[in-house]
Image (cartoon, rainbow, N blue to C red; front, side, top):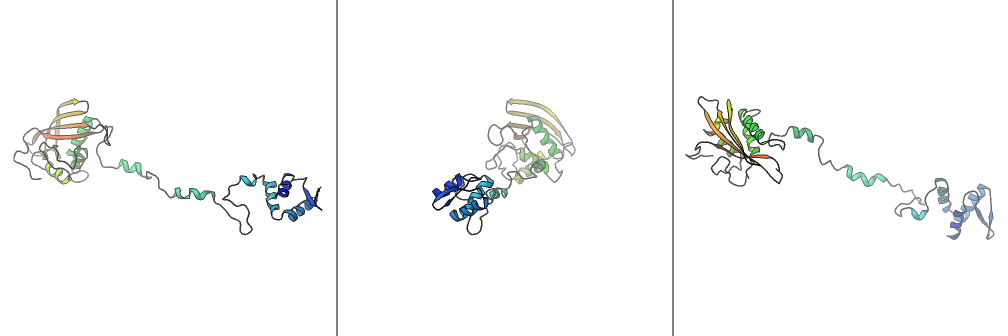
Length: 248
């Protein structure tokens, strides 16, 4: 190993080759290579690589990579460590933005309390567009009740966890005036609190002499996934709507 290190240190044009147990200088290139091959055998290959390519010393190379082998050379792919990440899909799909634009209409963070009420009444006015009872679906999305608990959305306590029950109440003789109504007028608007809004309105239905007065109560959520959204707490009729009971 001492002879090998010494030959590397004095490499280039001033190689020393061992003859008769001593070191002598030689300027003949062929004689240098022949002497190295005789003295060091295959280690001469490493010297030629270091001489031409200016590699780092052998002890600085990773131990897991073998540059030379007596058998078949080993090829290491640098990009193999990154191959797994290429198969992982992005967090958002390519059509995410387009799907957001086509999502069903409902609460938006940028809606004010007045706009939230107006959009719901517009949905009821054109209830069957683009499909039957689509306007009622919009109101169900704006509804702020817990589907697992009974709700006072219409005044009396109802189980509105299923949309079908919510839909049937709008087809009741009192609330059906809202479906496809012809005219409406705001009677009063009031912010009871900073995050609580009430609006009373008069509406004329599509049937003769069909007129009613209702009141929206909107609440702006604080905290949670709906933080900042205006949701409907209740939609009440001015009269005693369900005095005789309601099968829903």
